[in-house]
Length: 472
Ligand code: SF4
Image (cartoon, rainbow, N blue to C red):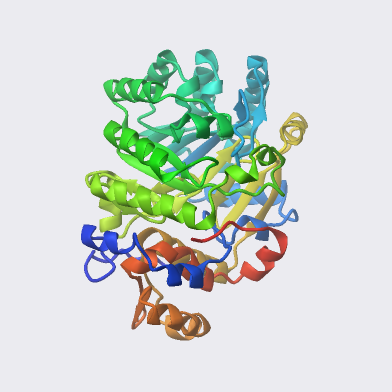
């Protein structure tokens, strides 16, 4: 299904007064819609992908993407998996190390991967979106940062108007690294903050002062970085409304352009390191919800607009502007104003999304390294999307980003079962169905994952494989 941006009129258009309505859903609704479900950073979601999709499939998709030609820009992601120590809440693919030589060896493999990928993409080499994530990209020292940039520049041309972003941990990023990133061409950054309370920080094994964070932000502003994002997490051990209020007041006073406010997915059965968190320190379900409401209200009162499912942005930030025009999009790196670019990713566990397929590299560093040393792409799993997958993906993405979708001319018959399943949500005031248009109403924004789940044809199968986090 093509996604056609509509003018931002009608009940789905974001409006500050409406946002408040989504802050305080009645407890009865929260109980009714409390379920486990995906966050839809992809559709179909990762548990539905298969190891039957391998390097040859990825190579074929790269060649297909290459045929789009030199003028079609790409989005490029590089995963830097190293961290100096492990945060107990971590849900990422990380390698704990204090040895800089490991990063050199890793860059050797990324270099090999770049050679293998670029030759298949042919003339398609323009990049309008580049993101380095991790792990901790600033685990790389200045020489290594420059080397990675040069490796990429050897194959790709970053366009003059490109969005070039990097994830930073203020506790391990020096002013010299920041200056070098800016000089290389980075213009946006995302800082992990999570919570400033000392008890919380001790429990999550991540100590980072407000002063460090403010200092890095001030320096970033001085250097000309825009679109600065802070990540916060609610539902962490020892988080209480009084201390969370303090963290919120501190970060809001710093006035970054954007916030991402994520729920902590506490899954100690699946993640051994999370077992270091005492169960007794975890906020209860209702307390966790109260923390989210508190954060949302504080953001609103400070003038930030709710963006998609879990982001907030100042009204003049490009994400706010794009949501107002219903042109916001979402990829593995988060919300973006550049919709539907093919994403080519490098590094262990990195996920590419191109030519109607997902491809993920081996997550284990030794497996990733071995593949590249043997001259093979390191693809470990992926999925070729069917026409039905593509249609549902476009629909779910539109819902998660812009709270509105036109189901298409045949939508009423194609999605007859889904539309019937939405009737209770319509009766509860969460959505409005009008012709082929489905609008998530302000009260329904809180439950948008539940709305998306109605259209997820793989959900039951995925649930047999993994335990998803709570939707509300
Ligand atoms: S810094 Fe991020 S990636 Fe590294 S251990 Fe902590 S949470 Fe995980």
